[in-house]
Image (cartoon, rainbow, N blue to C red):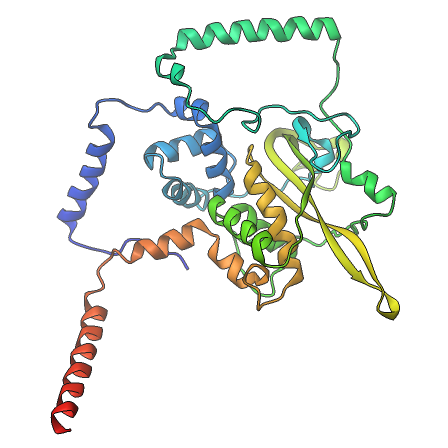
Length: 376
């Protein structure tokens, strides 16, 4: 169900829209789309993820039009996405092919290839940097020039030719038999953007809705899972941020081998494999400690959401409808930003007729109660 504005007085609506334009421009400063893309990387990544549309330029435009309101930007971008034709389906993407720029594990100190801290605020002091008040394009260019010179010197000295691909941490646990192998499933995934979500939901539907979910809602529910709904403290087995190459088959020979596929670009994603302790019931009432895992992947560098997604993925697998965070209908219906924001926003629209009916019921009830009191 999608909620949008109802019809109203034409002139009043036109004046309201003009007022929006005034509020956006009244300070006489126009926010450049390229500036949004360059300086609001986190917000751009969030909007792309919740919109299921990978385009930094269009996400930046939506953010500008929505004046920084992420829910409105997602609404705009999803509406635009619904108008686009689907010309091709990509080949299956394998995350082992990711060109990694950040890769950490909270489970192991030493991992094959090493920890790659990359770009993150995790290691910074959360203090306001007042120097940014006076930052200019010239100062930014000078800093970049010095940075690139230093990077070039280090590259020449170390001769680093690494292609950015790293082995998966969890594969080493699988080799030891400590976590189960994932059987290959070539079933065509469901598409929640083309068909309505049905229950019980398939795994592909769950993962799609989770990655499209409102970041704050997904994070809050994942926090609730750990706080009081049955999950022992999970541990990040591996978190990686990087670019995944995308290939499509030749339209002339769609059944050709992978070597004949066309490379059409790459997308930046965050992937998380979360390790979760679990107790397994064995024969004769014996219990054995085991490790299970949840999975999360979303557009851009969106680490908190990917972690939260992996927690909810594992929680939903248990499927106890009496526990809210394991109830797929509760979780999947309530994390969608367009649905939830639309319903809450529609409360601002005219409800004159329905409210008058309720008001009449209240008056009748009060009047009936008063008459009964007088009879007594």
